Length: 396
Image 1 (tube, one colour):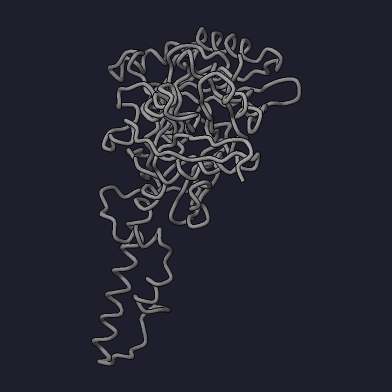
Image 2 (cartoon, rainbow, N blue to C red):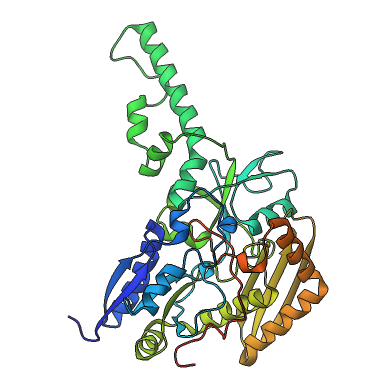
């Protein structure tokens, strides 16, 4: 029964985006709201054959959703936070940051291998500049190849070669056994017939079996939160990558609800905002905005509230992971946004600004060409455009 009104909220149409939007919907429904999710296609969804840092539009996965909100068509929009540009339109606020999911990355392999166990020259898939630099910093022998698509698409690309090889081996063995015995009820060469083996595959594996293989990946890297929220984590083997060396993208694992400043935004904030998650992501996005890295530079920023302080770790790499500027600092929680800006300026003076400028030159783009992007299902990075006003909570 409706008791607090109906909210119409925009979401992207990918499976993961819909799953994440449903988390927000259910949280609001627990507070007696009725929620209607409205699917909006974005520029980032339309351009599927380019890496995210080459899309050339600020907020490629965000802008169209927020425009519908600003035009008054919808009450709010649900985003993966690391898709969001760090500067918002004046009339728009981050109404709520629900409790954050797992912020780190995972290495997914067909055989449970760790990063250290991957063979010399192994091929690892990711379209994230940050992840590419971090991988090469740890293992400069790796071949890091582009990989785009939703979580299920990426996993299918990883699993396809091994599954197809096993299918071929089983089929040929059974065919030979049947030819030698001439018996329809022959004993299969393996523990099961090919049909029995196929029937036991998950839907993910069946889709992978029919996928055309262009690149054979030994491993891929995904956001932990995206893998879990996709509902596919229990179908694959993966290892958590340490946030100390694979520092996550700013806002990774967090969702955000944007709305125009006003009563609706304040109601949403009161209902589902998680203060700790807001503080942590504000620190991360403030540092990103001050550094100006966006999607053109490999930047990892991770903040954790620890009592009266917010501990922040930052790494800025060159594109090949050969050079880096790293830093860690405890920021007073009562002035976390300003302290984050001071920390970022110190990092810039220590060489981070030079690395970012070199990355900009390498990309052949100026700062105005940055994109807002994340890596919850098919993106990674962040966007610049100015210093956020602590993601402008409602009523501020």
